[in-house]
Amino acid sequence: MSELSTLARPYAEAVFRLAQGESDLAGWSSRLATLAAIVSDSQLARLNADPAMASDRVAALVIDVAGAPLGARGANFVKVLAENGRLSLLPVIAGQFETLKASAEGTLEATITSAQALAQEQIDALVAGLKAKFNRAVNVQVAVDPELIGGAVIAIGDQVIDGSVKGRLQRMSFALQG
Image 1 (tube, rainbow, N blue to C red):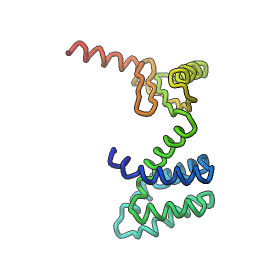
Image 2 (cartoon, rainbow, N blue to C red):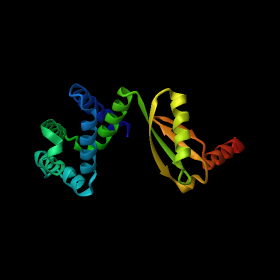
Image 3 (cartoon, rainbow, N blue to C red):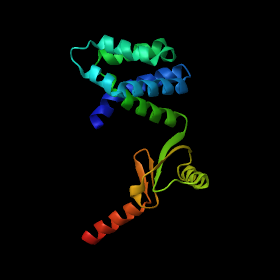
Image 4 (cartoon, rainbow, N blue to C red):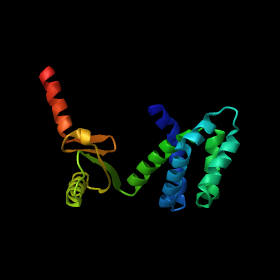
């Protein structure tokens, strides 16, 4: 995975600089999300991996599926990726772009995974706590994972706050073994 991140980074940074120059971070965010979804499709992934398929044909297909909202610069970006055999990196590029965008906007992206669905008041309290802790605005995604048994896990970038019952049991198990 780190190799993919390394390969994707220059493209994400280039698109980010372009988006900043155009004052269109939201537009590029949307374009990249669309492109990432397109290249993640299993049929398109097979075509892209087929050495008999010309890269310009795959790029044209991606551009056609993305449609008019992609624009000329977006189409050129797809062509550059295809020429360099990097179309499959689009999901990673999109993720790195979102990280750069959040940093530029002074926000953090957080994922809260809980054992059961959280009430809006609980989500608001967690977001308020994260804002206070990190002194930045927080965009939050909420997920449910019954395997956590109880509690929640909060992931912010490369930091993880594990307040789940499953995590506590694992920590106790390691402590008892050591």
